[in-house]
Length: 352
Ligand SMILES: Cc1ncc(COP(=O)(O)O)c(C=O)c1O
Image (cartoon, rainbow, N blue to C red; front, side):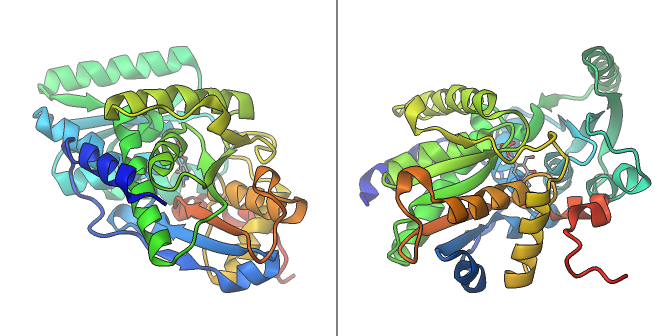
């Protein structure tokens, strides 16, 4: 591992305004019982343990997005998500911390109509953190009409707003995961380990694109495997490539070639926000070996992808075995579990 490019990337990241939401590195933990079960060494990067608003991957993006908003004198942030968006919840909490208003445009895109999904989990927390919520149906027209209502509301209030796309996945937000990659590579150096693959959920793909950009500079022998949870593998890979080249341009470095973008499309199941048997199994496995909570939309499907690789072989990184080291990036989302209730569980220990 060559510390040169990482130091250079670190210096480049330092040129962007940043509002601190993570006071310290998130832990990189061994998962011994899970490793024993799967026959490989699994390390878990605990981005679910970042502190503000019950944590998760969006805080890293929001450090840069809020830094930009505050530098531009904004007093309001507006963003988008599904009803149970973790990004929306973390935006609401981060805005509370920054002392600015937060407006959330939440769309009804996941086919769940039960009370829990519509009131609990992230939605409950959005309200707790003081966000103003604007509900929209899942149609393009419905969304456009809601955006117009928000715009006129903000104009009438005289607000100066920073609009942030779904998932915070604009190049500036993805810088948060370039920074995570540098942190992770330092932690791997401290443990004298060079992981074979890093597993991460890939939805709006800023997390995947940022990690890939950072790891290429800092830990070039480690590949990144995104597990598609929003769109199919081809569309997800296109987004990673496009966003990755924008992130590289922002930092003034070479973009990752398309061949470096690996996406597993086999865990999507019936679609975004719909658990699968494999995601439920993985949820139980992480909980009962390590006491770690996965979420039903992102991390459980990503974990299912990791479990499958251990059963079938990790493809381009050679045969799995005790010498194989896989990093699972735990991107958070546990509040979503309370919106899905028992539908997120595999039922293995449920009493009658
Ligand atoms: C818990 C969790 N993991 C992963 C992701 C995926 O991140 P990205 O949208 O950057 O692909 C999200 C996005 O909302 C998330 O909430």
